[in-house]
View 1 (spheres, rainbow, N blue to C red):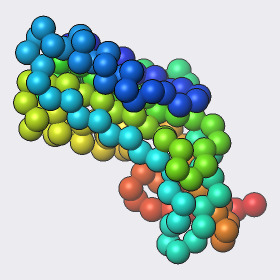
View 2: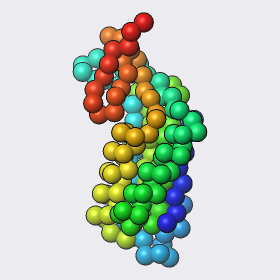
View 3: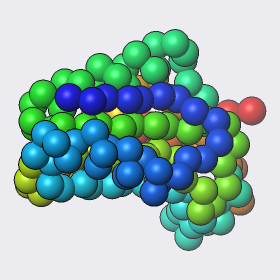
Length: 150
């Protein structure tokens, strides 16, 4: 399996990632690529979002991304995995996370990509502060928002 992960600043070319994983997987029987790109929402709870501030506990966050990617690659028989999570100040519409997986079948690719995403949201020490018109909120995975005290 071919795995690359990272906590990054700046955006990436999804086309280049897909070309790379296809190239390394074609001789191994790869036949399905699934891509997930998360991006900053412009509206949450009918409130305008100005930006998300992402921070990470490094170098542990990078190690955790790789651990998740390798474990899920083994579980779903993925041939290649790429997981890149951005940090810094990101505006609505800007990508936050890239997950690209290759497998021999679409079922494994879809399930593997979804599992990686859910684990990253739950386990990676990457924190986001949502800055919106009614205040600032810490985002707690999928468990909700906590208003930031000043």
